Figure 1 (cartoon, one colour):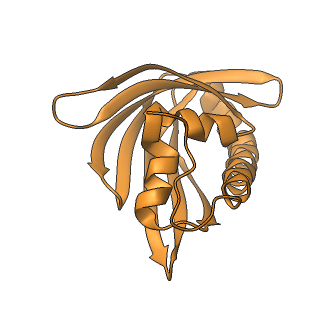
Figure 2 (cartoon, rainbow, N blue to C red):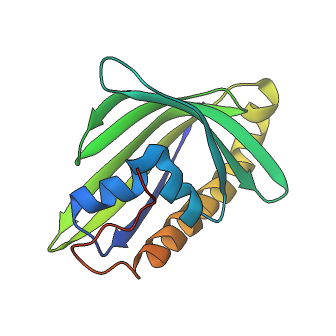
Length: 157
């Protein structure tokens, strides 16, 4: 059993700049702009050029940790990572699609339950997770809009 959820938002930055906003400085700027991501922990860039890290995010009063283990890390076009740990796993794809001078950042999460309880709750929680993911991505895009075109807005590297 699985569910697929989608989220997208328009970033007023080019693909390279949007990539840097999301993945630059070990995702710290992305964490700063996100209302639901609490932290990125145990960040490791492997010899093959793909990262692996634990991301902690809050859904309502609950903090969930999961491991993001990348198999595709194609700057500035797309990523694919396995979602490991936590009650819901699966495959997570991010696409950076140019739209004129801007970038549409799109998420596609193929959610797979990792526990029997998650399997039972998935039909009810998938729409809530989708709504939270969309709200978070739009909030990040909105916060990034204050960045003048052509400038990166990130913390020191």
